[in-house]
Image (cartoon, rainbow over all chains, first blue to last red; front, top):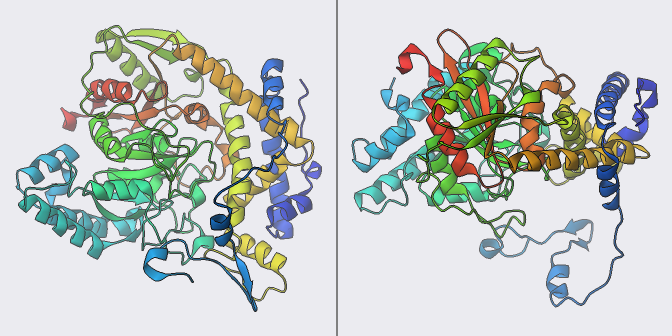
Length: 104
Length: 482
């Protein structure tokens, strides 16, 4: 199976930074690109000799079922726990310690 | 110094029952020890002295009334600072949780409270349990009590150091890929990673749900069994928890090993292991053989890939799990941000340390674009392959024997990131398969301890404790132990 050597230039660090929601300095971008390339090369080389049988089996986990709406007798209770907009803020129902203090 | 702290947990149990000393005296002795050792060791991140003394007094009152809650009533302990305790800071070694106080107890904490145990405080860890040396904590590094120039191991380094320095008779840690067993080996104590799902994880700030477990660090296997008895079992608040089949693990210790088949993992022995680790393995093998166990060499052809699978899985899961630390709901928040996006990005940039950032970035890398199949997808497949090989081996063996780490505690500052921790694959094996594994120390005069590891099928902790108990005296070759 294919073994790939990753170079720091292969790493789209701007995109990773956006996905991770972590802003990075230029120095960090350079250093993390090197680290990720090294680790990606190491990990992918060791994973390259996985058996076809296990790879097929693992791929089958990617097949997602269609969502099917079902009746739920506690929908009202669940929705009561959702945050709501109040003037200029979001109100979140108190859960921990609710018995003692009542709703926030 | 109060000599009480050097007694074993078993001696404490007996003495408390015989009313030779009180839980309050015992708790004060450990608090004095903590005060003495902390300036140099730094194993604790927070203490709850007043609460501990009150809990100890309540325990003494119960004993006076003839109604102790359990055999552990009045025994002090400490917990890793990624386990929630109501009213105490929960920081996970990170700046991003600065100022956060947990409003609830983790189930393991509630269970120990129900047994009458007395919490002394919270222990240091690598940031969000990502690391192998307890050097990445925002609370500073924890030093190894056996040699302060060396690391404790990690990520439960504070918990291991606290037991090794006699600051607590036992502690709780967490083990994602070896975070209880490796520091236990480096600090010369016992560390247990229980079967996945045996201990509730409700209240554990984990980072990789398919691998995280809460673990136990103690001075002996039998004491570890006592703590497991008090914490084990299904919990309606953790859907992954299951009932444990044995009701009293301590009582099951003492089983004969005659005829037991113990596999020595071929790929885990040889090149790269220190002389002391090879010697420890030899002593353990010879001892078990002399006791009548059938020692057999077994092969796990893909052991070498275990750390790569662990790194891909744990980073991918961390990338998702740690997204909730965004500066809005918990702890640290960046100031003067112009937008919500900037608030998220700067809070996380300023709140997380380098190791956490590296793993979150790698997790996103492993899950994005074609890497989803080439890295994460293959890691899923390889994990299945490793588990299949382990299952096959465990159908022929009762237990496996392998080193915990390749050497003893290394010098502080040497290994700086997971990029250099490839030899940790010895611990990741049990984690990938969700199997129980226990690290036992091998002590020799004038040398730092090393660890050997026993691993078994799911819910075989009784076997682990029995075999470990038989090996303990053979593996302690210090003159002082004779």
